[in-house]
Structures are given as C-alpha cells and as structure tokens.
Image (tube, rainbow, N blue to C red):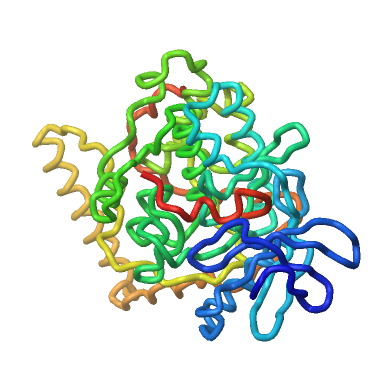
Length: 390
C-alpha cells in the first residue's frame, strides 16, 4: 500500500511510523472525524495465515475493550482488500525505549513511569486481558503531562532474535520470566515481572539481561538474577529499589500478586512492600490466542533442605507406616484406586468483573526463606520496540 491511499473510503494512509515482525504502523487521517490516527496493517505476507490473522483480530478486540488514560485507545478495526487493519490513537511522543537509549532516567521519572504502566495493566488484568509483551518499545509517551501509555496488547512478534514464536511461545525473551521461558502459560505475574525489568533498565540504562544469543539469554534468565538496584545505583531511594528488586525475584512466590499490590508498594505502603512470601493469584481468562508452550525442562521451585536428626527421621517414617497400615485395615474401599482429577482448561472464556481483579486462590506454601528486604503502538514510537536492542 503506497502513501496517501484511502482505507475503506475513510482513512487516508501516509508514511510509515514503525515496523514490527507482524505488522507495520502508518500515519493516517480519519476523514470522517477529522483527526490524526495511527493505522496498524498486517504484513501482506502474513495475511494468508489464519492463525496470525486471528491473533491480530484478538489484539484489536482485546484492546478495544479497555478504556483508560494509560492505555492506547483502539478506534476501529476492519479489513481492506484482504488486509486486516487496526486504527489507533495517534500520539506525538516517544517510546520508553527512546528515552532509555539517551541514558539512565531520574529515579522520580522511573517511579512515575512504573505507576502509569501498572495503572493501565491493572485495568487490563481486571478485564481478563494479558499483555504478554511488556517492554520499553511498547510503552508510549503521551504529550499531556508526559504520562505513559501501554500499547500492543496481545500482538505476537515473528521477526528478529528477541521477538520469537519458536515452539509457539509468544513475546520478547529479554522481558520474559523464568517460568515463561521454561514453557509455562502466560500469567499476570509475567506482565508484572516485565514491568520490574523495565524499571531496572530505566534506572541502569541497559537491559537487565543484555545477552543477544537466545541460548545464552535463556540460560541467564533461568539461572541468574540481576544485581540489586542499590548495587548499581546508590542514589535510588530504598522503596523504589525494593519494589524493583522484589518484582524481578527469581522465586515467583516472592513477587507481587497484582498490579494494585505493586502500585501500593511503590507508593510506600509498608504492608504491601514487606508482605513476605505471597501466593500468585489465578490467571483470568485471556482474550488473546493461547499458544502451546515450548517443550523444555520445567521450572521447579525447590524448598530449602532442613537438617533432621537421623533418629527423628526413622521415628517419623515408622509412625507414617504404622498409621497407613492401620487405616488400610479399617477401610475396605481403600484398595480401589482414586480417580485422577479432571484437567481444568484455561482456554475457556470467563467473564471477569469489569473493575475488580480476581482474588488470589489459596495455595499450600512450601517452606521458603524469608524474602529479601523490600527494597504499540501509537505515535512516533510504533514498532520501534521490535528492533533488536543490545
């Protein structure tokens, strides 16, 4: 499609604002409402793939349901001569990636950025929408007050080293949690982990996991943790440092359970900040196409070993055997094998509350050490996050 063509007899299409592995974003003008817009067009080479077309449509429907000052607004969705398109709010600002490229951000600006992004994600999660690709290139700067807006809900990146669909895993590996890299389904916790990595990158001026080689990057994410914020920037206030350190902890039980939880800690709520080990709440029904995870070794959380006296162990084992034998003798039906629990599908749509995130489900916590002290697109930035960053 060349510049200044008309889309469905309504939108005038002009120059390219950005390109990604799945789509390109063009500058546009809504001739009916007389306002500037950004138009995302699926790449012509991908229009014949039903799965990609469906994912592109899912992005439009998911984002169109969200109305918040920290989320890029979706105006329209359609099909022009076989090419799906999404019409978005046109923003004049930069992406967070542009800002970080200029150097580390002041701590006060990082705090404000995190609060804006978490506010937008809180609304999305309450509506049952996961982002799955939170990164600086998908956070746009809005001119009024320089607030941040989250863009690119549910889009799957298909080009470049970091933007991968290998094994049907969707997202940008540099900002994936260890569980996600291991092949676990996307969750609210993954979005929050990526927010923590963005905060770390904004303070330091480089990615927390800077490896470019996919194998080395996956190994670093699975087996290491970035140095604490205080070790790389001693001018950051302890609350902000503690929030970021906790958000990117390797143990998911030590992280925040919701965007609201993380925002409260960021605001200085000591109960939220020092809440100790918490369980991760249930994932809402996502409104994006679920993909099969890559086959890999599961990410296993290991409880710390506790030393026991050998006599105490022997006595405990004998006691368990004795109780088990007694129970079997009393229960004639005990020899009948119990039915395995029916698998629960996570793909069935669930209509969540429009304003309240689903409550966390209780879990049986394993012994764990005390957690450490707390310490897209629219506008010029469309698609810039799809470029590989070293």
